[in-house]
Length: 91
Image (tube, rainbow, N blue to C red; front, side):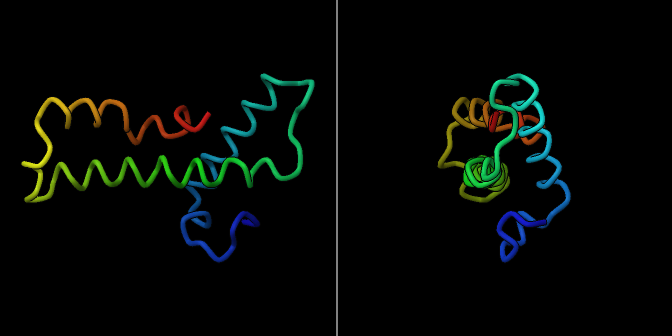
């Protein structure tokens, strides 16, 4: 709730959960550092960018301009920018 309180993206429970999951796993895998204050501020622009890229690719594939994207490139981008993998990509 405290990460960028004026930005609706970070107030969504789904995105709060994504941040919590990434930071929790990072802390578990790096016990010598664990979690430090401000790590959410480092993660937030990464999460926002990856989530926007995923959304943009999905929108492009559905839009009338989808001809701008050849099918191979579209499939590759969809595989790389999969909504189910946003947390993994941010990690």
